[in-house]
Structure formats: C-alpha cells, structure tokens
Image (cartoon, rainbow, N blue to C red; front, side, top):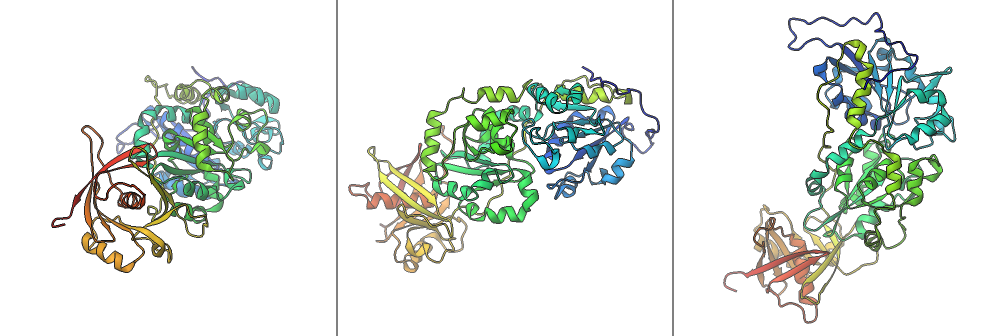
Amino acid sequence: MEFRLPGLARARRSGRPLPGRDRWDTWEAPRARVLCVARTLTSATRLLDVLPLLRREDGIETYYTVNPGSAFAEGLDAYFASLGVGDRLLSWDEATRRPFDLAVACTVNNSMRQLDAPLVVLPHGAGYNRLVTETTGDATAPAGLSRRELTWRGKVVPAAIGVSHSEQLGRLAGSCPEAVERAAVVGDICLDRIRRSLPLRDRYRALLGAVDGRRLVVLHSTWSSHSLLGTHPELPLELVTSLPADEYAVAAVLHPNVWARHSRRGVLERLERAMDAGLLVIPPEEGWRAAVVAGDWVVGDHGSTSLYSAALDRTVLLAATGLDELDAASPTAAFARRAPRLDVTGDLYAQLLRAEAEHDPELLAPVVESQWEAPDKSTVLTQDLLYGLLADAGVGAPAATPEPEPVPDPRPLAHRAPTAFDVTGRVGAEGAVEVRRYPLAPRHDVEPRGFYAVTDEETHPLWPQSADVLARTLMDAATPPTVWAEEAFWRLPGLSVVGAALDTDRCLVRVRDGRVWEALADRPWGAARARLDPVLVACAVHVAASTAGGTELGAPLVIRTGRYLCRVSFRMAPGE
C-alpha cells in the first residue's frame, strides 16, 4: 500500500543530486537520504524501532539530528554518538540547510517546519495521552495531537501522522481537523516487538534475578509531579525492603525524562539506598521492554510502560494515576480510572498477593483494545507508509515482509547484593524450615521482625554486632573457610551460626559450640542446577536450632522460601 499525500506534490524536488557510485565504494551509492529527528531520549529510542525498516540495501542513507527546545534533551548527542552514528549526526542548523527525501520523528513540534523534507511523525509512547500545556498551549488536546504542534500559520506541518489506533483519529478531528487527512493507523512497533519477545521471558527473568523461585515486581514511574516517584519518592525503598529477598526481585523502570531532567547521577543518588537493598534499576536507553516481558507484577502509574504491561496481562497496581495531566478521553485515562490501586501506606507484600489472587484478565482488556490496533502488523504498515513517501526517489518497496525484532536483553544497574537482612523463620508442619529475609537499608528505620543476618561485607557499624548469623559469600577468599568461621566467633561473640560459600551448591556451616558441617544442595534427577546461598542456609540452621522441637542439627533440611523448596544435606567434618 502506497501512502498518498493529499495536496502534496509527488514530483521529486530539484536540487537533490546524489553522488554516483565511486570506484572506492563496495555498494551502490544511496538513492535517498532520510533524516531521523529526535527531541528527547524517549523519541530517540523509538526511532531505533523504525530504523530497521529503512533498509540500506534499498538505497536509503540515514542522518540524525536533535530538534532543540525540549526540557528533556540532555544527553541526546552523546546517545547518538554511542550508537556509532557520530559521522551522520547533524546540528539542527545544518539539518535545516540540507534537503532530504524524508524526515522521521517520534515526536512533533512545529519548529520541524524548517526541515526541507516531508515529515512523518510517529508516537513515542502508548498513543497520545498526556496534556502538556507548556508545549501544546491547549488544556484539552494531548501532546502530539495539538494544533500548535501540528500546524504553522494555518498549514499542517507533518506530511503523515502515524497513530496506533483509529480512536486517536476522532480526538485529532476535535483538536486539529485539517490534520486528519494526513493521519494513518500504523499500530505500534514497540508493542509488536514486546509480543515477539515473549519466548525470551525466562532469559530476561534470569538476567533480572527472578531465579530460584523468585518472582519479579517491576516498578514503573513516568515523569512529572503526578508520577509515582513525584507523589511517592520513597516507594522504591519501601517496596524492596517490604518483600522477602528470596521470593521477589524488584526492578525499577523510570521514564527517560526523569534521567534527562535530574541527571544520571541524580537519579542513582536518589535510589542509592534502595539499590543497596537489592533494587535493580533499568537504564533509560533500553531494558524496560524486557522488564515488561519478564515481570509478574507491575507497581506503576499512568505512564506507557504500565499500559504495555497490562497488554501482556500482568498484575497491575497503580500507586499514582496522573488523571490531572491526562486527556480525559484517552484510553490511558480510562486505564488510570479502572486499574487496581496500591495503598502505599499499607502492607505491600499482602497487597501483591491479594492482587494476584483477584486478578481479572477482563478488567483492563477493553482499555488495551482501544489503545492499539493492527496487532503484529505495525512493521508492515509503517514500512509501507515510509516507502510510499520514498517512491519518487527511486526506492522500491522491499519484497520481503518485515518482522519485528525481539527486544535486547536487560542490563540493569545494580549495587552489590544486599549484605544485611532482618529474618523471620519457623519450622512448618511438614518439617520444612520456612525463612523470610527482608533486606535492611541504612537510614531506614523499621520495627525489627526477627533476627539479623549479615554477610562479611556489611559495613554498618552496628548490624554485625547485633547479628545472630554471619556468612561469607566470596568463594575465593584468602583465608580458608574453616579458619575464617572460627575467627568469626571470636570477633562477634553474639553469633549463633556462621556460613561460608565453598561452591555454588556447597557451603560450610559452623555453630557456636564448634560443630562444623558441609552443606550440599540436593539436585533431583533432571532438575536445574542447584544453588546454595550461605546466608540462607545459615539462617535456616539457626531457625531449626532455636525452634522448640526443631530439626536436629546436621540432619537434612528442607528450606522453604515462599513457594520454592530446597533440600539440603549435611556432611560432618572429618574426625567429628
């Protein structure tokens, strides 16, 4: 399908000669030049979804520029340089002086009228939903569909406007009716890539720590004072310290505008204590889509990432709705009104479990269906739109139908693993030792739940002195584990049990009276590799020894963490 531009001359403009093939060139010279335009990191990353559709082998040469004026443009030049396109990165002044056969942007501003090229505008999120009056000058039209952004002196600036659902055409007709004839439903490449990545869910989960029975909670925050972080800045810390570390992994996805506005260092400083307690932070450039695929629960707000998670039928709880900055007629506003809420002052752990038990797949289905159209067809629709506009440059449509690519692996930012825990435990009716370890964070005062367990890397001046359990997690330390364990009781006389890693599935355990065992994880036939955390094993031994009628020390233990069971056998040290 070729996209025809109403009222726009299709003749190739003069003054656009492209060089012939040079004898030094391996491939033929390009037939068309396309300019990729970004205003924010969000729109820049969305361009990367579109770029594979503009195939170099079809004679398309791509250039890049930053359209100035956004409050969130910090770091864009460096981002493009990191992609290896520095030699094709043009200043805005240079980009407006050169002619191009096409310009593509995933955001719109009427200053793009300065470009000498037909402009295609595509969404950079889940449709068009947010009211940004500073940009639009309109209290009712969302960013991307406003008259101020789309027109200049009564003329529509973009040659084509991509929308993800025909519902958006009705809202566009209300805000800028003359632009409707330039609009086309193209679906959402981002969602298609997320859906194509579903077979990689286990891979993404492993990279985000959701292993050995852990399930993944993904915290999503958009930008602005109405966002999750804007309304509840301490929620990442509260969440990660409220959930047992052996049952949950927690990853945070922050809108790129948060990073651009407050700097990378500023963001990490604000999240430092939560990261010390185990929070994984997804970088702003990429990884959030893999987190959407990998997640089990979403604690979010009105940002697009929460809506994408709902599209995969994840259990969603909203800590902020942002209704004050949303187009009331948008699907995102309907999502914010309908999705279950999180009480940030309540028991976060209990609320996750209750939300899972009460999850209704049909609750948010109508919202999802009104946000995205043409599932799994966006690459074809978008490529047809772009190549239709390049036809007069001699660029023929590709013979093969493009397929959406899976999203890249997540590469979370993390501090070292948590080194201090508040631990509760009991021996269950079946004889399993049930252990829950809650990460401790500096300057985060909470009522103690049970006993303290720390690793030998803990630097807090008081927690090791108060601990009942100490463990060394490093396997290749200079001091032999038996010597280290003996010395630990001399240094910290309040200890009850000490553990030291020997291998991924073995650890040494010593109790105060001097008895020493080697603990080994039992691996049933056909099961995945066994892993033993020396902190967890030492905690289980302490619980078993201190529980009335508990398991005899040295006997096999079944350790339960949530729904996960690990059977551990013990070998007494030789000569004992």
